[in-house]
Length: 212
Image 1 (cartoon, rainbow, N blue to C red):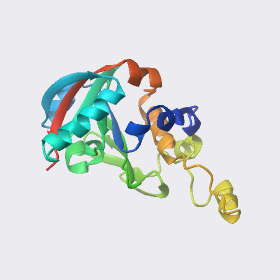
Image 2 (cartoon, rainbow, N blue to C red):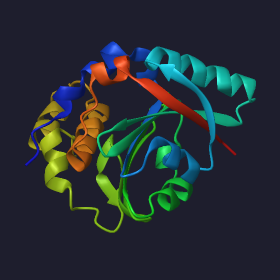
Image 3 (tube, rainbow, N blue to C red):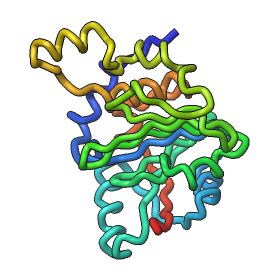
Image 4 (cartoon, rainbow, N blue to C red):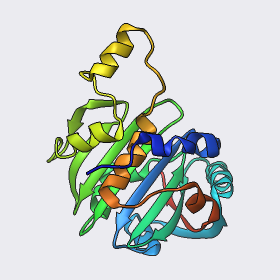
């Protein structure tokens, strides 16, 4: 039963506006940060404390590498590794994420500055679900409808929702909660709650991967 909803994650954009502009959050079960980095073919970088330092370092690395490397900030949360990419998309890039998900569960969601978004749930190299949070009616994967009830429950807006239809008729779509809903769905799949305190108080193990 889904209890966490998009409303529980509306703080993210308010508290961390620089990170919220463009990001990828990934949760990987049963692997330590160093193991995740190794699976992605990355190299270690200096540790960083808090999201502001992570965002600044990510953009510094892009400039220093002429766009050829992407920063990954990682920490252990129980049995999971949380991986954060400011302005990155490695976690939802299937030719990298699916092989890296071997033997484990991989849950990732992404937003970029142009409004493009993606949600990926993989199990042991298999894409179980992929969709754009802003357009949840179209879904791909081996089990594209398994989480449909949960997706409704956390607050994704579907085209056939009565509330969505009423809002469209009134020409008032209301706030876009697709990104907070993606956080809530990731929590549903992993049991890991991303909180402001977790982001603010963590010293992240960092690494980088080639972007091309």
